[in-house]
Length: 264
Image (cartoon, rainbow, N blue to C red; front, side, top):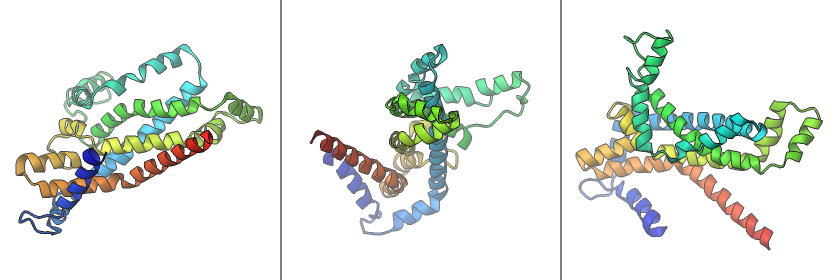
């Protein structure tokens, strides 16, 4: 852990304060803010929106799979896991084909009479990138959240129903509160993964402005060999996930402590 994660993490922070002359300076951060502030805000916006929508849809799907036992739910239980095993590079190529100006989505909407193909939807931007992340992250979220719902005993649900609780009250007063740790862990993992993803933003929006921090880091290294600004961008990405990382570590420590207390 120290060699593979600790050392690179601390090294990137230290080097972000070293300018091209090898002196301690805030020059890299000044340049980063001047050149990439919009991209930092863009990254945060895409991450927050994608995480929130993925979580909401994942909770709805998980609730459906938990409460409904039917051929449709059994089919979905098998199908929703498929995107988890699809790499981001494949997802990016799929989204390029699906969201292109003359791609499958625009062609379908044209046949339905909803748009004119002469003026197709332009989705190689915030909206297309968000859609791609949501498509990829919903199955991962469902895997965690649905597993938590499965641990809730049916007696709690039946007790709520016997007291007159409708479906929404069962969901909001029983299922979600009792599964809050799993939901929050799913949020943390999805949020962190989106911040660090390079392939999908690079292949979907490329060099357009704004773009994500990961694309900017690759650009500074590949074209300018500017490791100082690249490290400063990395520090900004660390800051974006700092609170979520702290929460995840604290929850993991509490879970381990609780398990040890239970064994004791």
